[in-house]
Length: 203
Image (cartoon, rainbow, N blue to C red; front, side, top):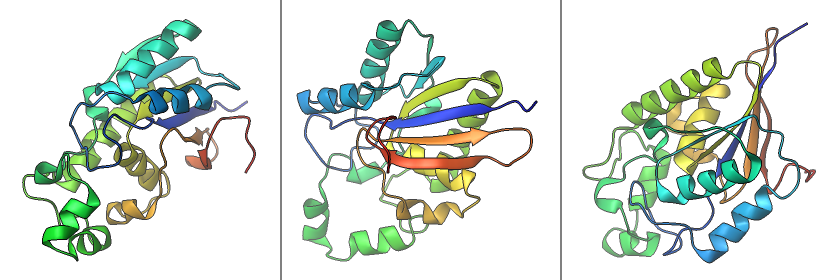
């Protein structure tokens, strides 16, 4: 009999202030964001433990959910979003106003086109995947939920798919959507699904 570990990844809902390069700014969820998150967990809730980023748009809902489901909660600093440096708090239109091709360069080669003062992509990837490896080891054989950010989830998924980290922004991670990874003794880590609104939804 094989040992199976299941990891569900849930991106936070809409934060106060809407879409922008928020990075490590600590905005809470908007009212809409809370609604999105509650809908995401309104069907199946198979988890045995919850792990969260410390930033409020993740941790406040994680605390709520852990209380609702009577599940243990770990807050792991390493699951913070990537630091965007001087881009933090800015919208795409604000960035394009000064340089119309700035985002084109970034998305095609994010490792070598970092915002000024941004966290290096390799450093970010290393801290996220150290946290993820520790979580999988600690909860081997269980079904866990990690509540985090688009960048964090991209980092984990690119590792799962053995893809170069420079391709991470080719993955679209919408707010309050679930992805699942399974690991067992016979197969390498496998992406089971990506981007579901809730677990009972079929795509």
